[in-house]
Image 1 (cartoon, rainbow, N blue to C red):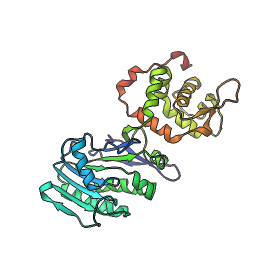
Image 2: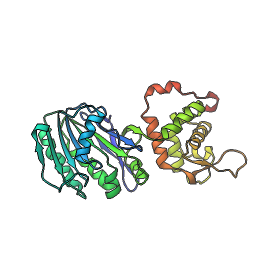
Image 3: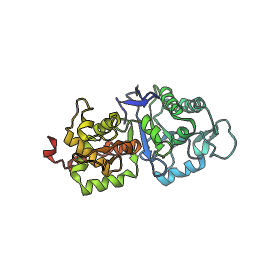
Image 4: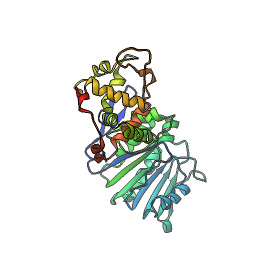
Length: 314
């Protein structure tokens, strides 16, 4: 959850802009590369405002019983896609189903989507409610990262002084993965990630627990070093020299980089004699982000299973 934390976005110049969240409200991001993000799991609020970019209203309503076993006590839906049958219309209310819905169609301006959400928030302002966004990926693919920043920032603004929480889903598709990685910090923003890198991480944990321990504890420094390094084929000590106030040594960073090679994040340069050189031209930042987010969202209790070889610390 994001209580007392920052929601961080990266602008086109790669400058991180902290956007403070309200201490009484929670924002979470859930990411998946294996189908629709699991945004409804654990949705305790009986009052729900759903924003749909990837799902039609009928399909979304059927999904409640399939996933949670029951419908929300009350739900308002804003459909911002062309997946719902019928032409765009004003807000409709179905009293016996305790449902209100607004069909906007697509494409639609972000401001209109936010205004529709705000209209439903007015009806739930004095109640505890949850805003659920089914999947931001279509908006990101069709309108770009600026539209996503406008939407998420506008959502935060319109929920000021409300007793609500926000769950944002985002598919990690190949076409938009770099933008997702630039929008959401894998440590501070992502609450849950369901990604195929799980299998590679489980394999490394099983086959080489020592190296897995180094990757788990030092992946963020390794990512920083790799992304700042201007050499194509550096040694671990040359990557380490870039880091300031590092919690690693050249050897522990080297062990971490070795693990990232096993995980398919980068490669080694074979034309060398002596210390290993890493091929940064093969670096995959989107895969690095997914690995970092997966490790960051694991329970702290998994730390006890890490094995770190002490001699590598020097």
